[in-house]
Length: 303
Image (cartoon, rainbow, N blue to C red):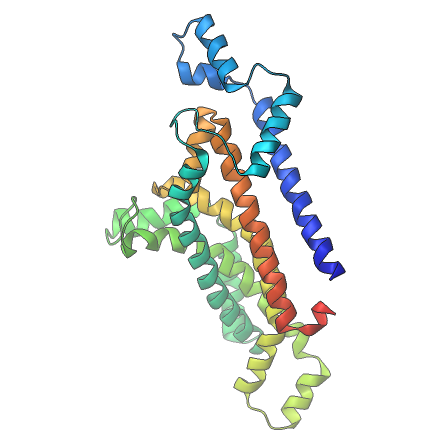
């Protein structure tokens, strides 16, 4: 119980740090959102009036207090450009981001874990050596360079997959592949190393002496490796969310990444703040789910 309270307090502190950091960074960045909204031809009186209307003429601490109150009450404010509630905009754009992120994580977990466990089980074999080379190659490509390569091959040269938009299955294949490749490479290496570590334990030799076949032993080893793999997934989730937002921008997908990109371009404080806060809350929620699953898979963690 004490451990759960401690983790919950840590999560609240993490969200508070993220909330404060984004407030400071946005205000420290050069540029005036009021001038951006009204345009270069706006008169000084109009700028002053609109700044007062938005509360940007108040002392920074007052702005921060009002901002925190809004976060706690769930009021993210109104977009400066779209003139709509931020929470409504996020609800509209969240669907593609959630679909991309969670399908990519699920596929990467299955692919990376299976290949990594099998490579570790067949240590120093042909498949093991090949998988290590492939995983290292995949890790060498960041998303912003991998996506254009996939577009060039499958869209420009072969013409089998669309480059942009969001609709059917064909539109989601390239973005999902872009996200799955680097994460599966990470999980492949982690699961392989964990299996090699557990494979030398005495209990594995006991199973072999009892006459269990390779599949039965591999099944038990995979279960033992799962908590480590889930922890890596939880850690990598922030990278996946960031990668999803980059991918959305590249493939012109109307998700939270596109909304964040537009907010940064327009210096739309409420939108940028809202997207970062929601992303942090999603990350912390998944972290709790992973921790809960680990405790069920391996009771020693809970103890």
